[in-house]
Structures are given as structure tokens and as C-alpha cells.
Length: 310
Image 1: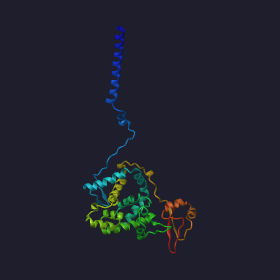
Image 2: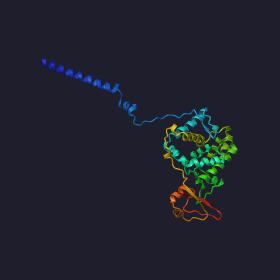
Image 3: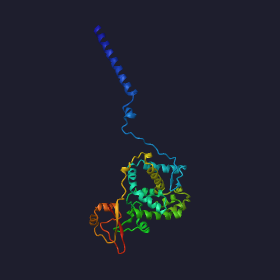
Image 4: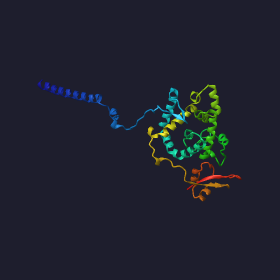
């Protein structure tokens, strides 16, 4: 009996110790910080980032005309476009890199034509500053459809498409925009008309008795269009405020190192022509994207200015 009691005593001691240890471990796992909590501490962030809304205090303007963000609907629509473009990282970085290539030429022509500088952001919204082609067939930085391009003096055929000619297309866009301004006397209405066409704007403006462009209730693309332009302007003018750090060296260089030659005779093979000029077919097309085939036919009395990179 004595040995039995001794054995039971020892067993009770071991059992008590085991229960105390188990209780301690449980306290550590339930009362202390979990693994997830530890990993979320400031010193252990695996994805350090700050995701926040944008400052909507403004003021926001387009071509000197106000965007009335005191109206909650206008404020929310602008907010959506600012957020959409601020967090569209790849696209916004590309725009920041491209602007040095395109803006100097566009800004110069807008100034010469008496068009507000802010209209350059319309080109950004239209094409992302590239010689894009839309699903509907609009082409170039200013996204002209074929009839409109031809109507404003751009040559468009199987060999030449001047919608891809930055200088000529920008001149044509200025004429187009100024024509709308004569009608509306408000660059905000001009932007809507550029997007969906003057006849459509006039129809919906009349039907809905809209006094301002912000009162229109139409297709989602046009409803967002002006806000997209203003959002892009806001971000591109102060990219650092939105977390974009692009050094001058990262900008794509302007295509301003070239000599211009006048072509008065047809060129049957542009690859041969490029070699004769000391360049490549590829670089000839980079500097002259309006040349859309492998040849160039020059009719009697006509001529073309072609840029040769140097």
C-alpha cells in the first residue's frame, strides 16, 4: 500500500505539471499575438504600400473653365476618373514617358492656332499619345475617322494616312475644335462634341434641356470623357503627388533629330530609298508614320516632306 500511494503521488505531480505546461502554451497561442498579427507589424510588411483616395479640394479647370466639384455628382464622377487613372500604373507611366515626345509639337501648334493648351489632354484621353487605331476605325493621336480626317484636309489613301502625321493632324484637330467652339462658346461642351459628335450633343442637349454639359445623362463614355481629360491633366501636371517618380532620363526622346527632304517623284520601294538616305526602313517609318505602305506615289504637281533621321 505504501508503494502504491507513493506511485500515485508521483503520478499526480507529473499530471499537475503537464496541465500547467499545457495551460501556459494555450495562453501563449490565444492571448499573445498570432503569426498573422506579427507579420502585419510595421517592421514585417511584405507589401509596403499606401492606398488612399485623392484630394478633391481642387480647384479643377479645363481650358480656363471650372469643374464644379461642389456638386456631389460632379465630384463623384471626377473622383472615379482620378482613381481609375491614378491606379492604372502601367498606362500612366507610359503617358509620363511619352509626353516629352509629343507635347512640345502639340503645344506649339495649339498656341499658333489660338487653341487653349489644355486641349492637348484631349489627345491623351483619345489615344494615350500613340498612333492608335480604335475598334471603330479612328486613327492617330487625335483619333480621326476617315470622313472627318478628309473633311479637314488630311490625305488618306492606300499609301498615305495623314491621321498619323502629328503636325498635320494637330492642325486639323485645331480647326475641328475651333469650329465647335464657335457653336458652343464653352470648351467643356467642345470636349463632349469631339467625343460623340456635334449632332448627337445637340440632340441630347435639347431633349434633356441641359444648360451645362454636367447635366447630360447619356452614354457612359461621353459622361466620363471630360472627367477623364481633367483627371489626366491633374496627374500629368503633378505626377509626384500621385506617387509617380519618372526621371527626365526615362522620358522617351522627341523625334527632333532629322533632316527634311522634299519628294517630288514617286518612290517605288521605300526600303531602297531608306538605304540610299543612310537609314533603315524601320526608322523611316518611325519618323514618318503617315507612310503606311512600302511605296510612295507622287502625282504630278504634288510633293511630300519626308523626315530622314540623322
